[in-house]
Image (cartoon, rainbow, N blue to C red; front, side):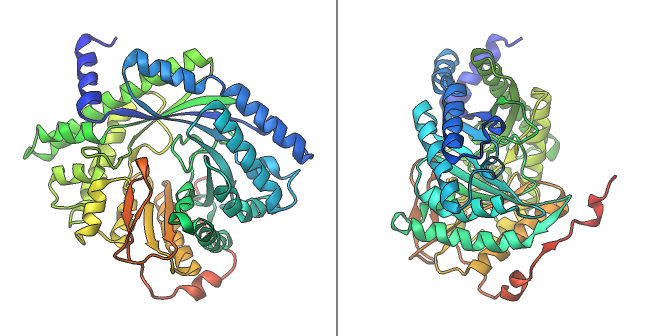
Length: 454
């Protein structure tokens, strides 16, 4: 049972420490929408989304009012569209019509973002997968709410280097199409290794084929809560530090569990998972980098950063799994540059580089997230950065991702403004030495030896 002390404590977290439910994401299966007729397929998709999600936004608002807990985003994730559109779509333009249908349905039901314009190609690409990937520039640049993800690698299958090479080219095309808006549409596209089926966070959310017809997944976030808790134990030993993070993560996850169960009851849709991710925003006091500073670093990126982040991530997970039986998604600490004022400050101070962020990927939830790079970066260089990130996930048996934003017309020393929760970012320098011959090789990098466990 939740007592009055916990209620008071939670209210303080919300009012003073930026605690929020970052997203309620309704996952919807589209497997029953498959049709060889493109028009009928789009009609079925629109009808399924608008029927299942018709009360999502209203329910979230009612829960906000009842519990006085901010719910920042209401989102939808769908079965990877490459699986749904294969029978009807014969060209990239055909697939793009599905993106427009998703966008119209999302607008109709009042959600912020809709994910699942996705392909899972870690071992190879079907014709449908390739058509969807080639349609991504027109899909993202012609819609407002649609998000796209592509799973390029896994520990079990290795890295699909043909798809890695293609995604470097596609990302530049997205950047070029939205260059009049500082290539902003790139932030709606992410590539993964070991993508989870139940991730509620965009741009990577999709509804995996192992999921039920519809599920409620909730993502909670509280970097400010963790930082405030650590301020009270400043200078204490590592045992006290770890216990404080773990207990705080437990409390934050309990809030998400409460919201998820209530949403599940009101919508009569099964509860899926809680994703406890310390996801920052540009707001002051809502920074993962500031937690690292509170642990004892002058800036994120200083020597010791990877160790501090490993400690933080592990204790967050330990606290979270004690608070909910169904912790999933990504769960841990996000380190996006543009969405975290402390990370931006670290970049501007010269404390953190792309290579250090890559090293931090080994111990955090995602990877190279919301990083602006020069617009004249070659496609092969982008593919090389992606390949490195995929390799970290593959070998370490964890989820990694890359969400890079090549800003056309801008270079190192300039900044780019994305607005709202997405913040702003300094353009980070990229290693200019060539990897062209490596990226030109065809095929895939095999799975590591430790993947064979049967």
